[in-house]
Image (cartoon, rainbow, N blue to C red):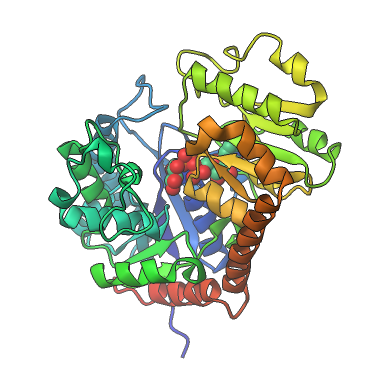
Length: 424
Ligand code: UDX
């Protein structure tokens, strides 16, 4: 006898690009597996409904109108968690009254940890979506267990290895530091974000084949089932845009005019802010590299400036057709373009996974002082070829995970069975 399964899944994203994207991609995946998907989102950064006609959307009052959230503070993030509690609860109650027991579970972004409390009150199963790498979470948890072992550290230790976290060094601690220590409120917030409360499972935008040892270690810590089903953007059947900002598609025509494997793509994601000094250094690095480049300068990403006005006078004229600057690019399309040879990135997890999937080698932002040299090294030298080979190897792991018999597909089938079997 066929068991009737509950059809509806509620998703609660955190309203920032690097988080909204993987949640909407997860929604597409679950929808393709036969679930109805309801996205309950904040008013801030409302997703573009017309790009996702297959979902039902509901907006909740986040109470943060008029506040600049372009770079959210700790206070903003706590407020979001507090203010959304009642609206989410009220909506779920009315939905459950109308729809009976058709609600299978709530999937929430790890930053929206209030959702677990609401789900527990309503006796609904909740599942956490981890939007970052397993390695990042593992490093946070290792440090939480004995913060006194790490903080405060001396300036002279910056290049020393972080105990138990090889190959990270003190300069890489995964928290913002002040005077070589982490303020207690930041540690508390990160603890809340890494805690899963009474959630029954964790979904990961990562691949078992890429992060198996980290996932195994985390599995010892969290005693609930893990479903690493990444890369979500490749597992999702629909390639509809999840961008909050408007994508400038004209850069694809510009890429079409460039030689294969010649262009450096430069983007620091959706949150990073730099100062004008760093913008100017980057500009000279790109100019002196003599390589074609496509550079995303997002509005608000240069402190004190609207957008690209802080560029050196005459910069765009000087680089001419060799350089293209846009406010926001269709990044996945850009990385998949045959003209793109390298990615200068801040290493956000989505960007990292997207880049590996297209086997585009990366230059990481921390090496800015060495930037001009580094660009030529990546694009033109034997050492650059080694980097390319490593990224090709990583891509092979992801391709293996995505095969019909691969781990991400198997984990997705297990996830569907798991959600279907959840008790009411
Ligand atoms: C942040 C963190 O950096 C990331 O590690 C965390 O997991 C989510 O929150 P963000 O800084 O924006 O996200 O970086 P990233 O994870 O790389 O996400 C940026 C997304 O914006 C990517 O999916 C990328 O494709 C997209 N993007 C970026 C565009 O579509 N166009 C652009 O011009 C730039």
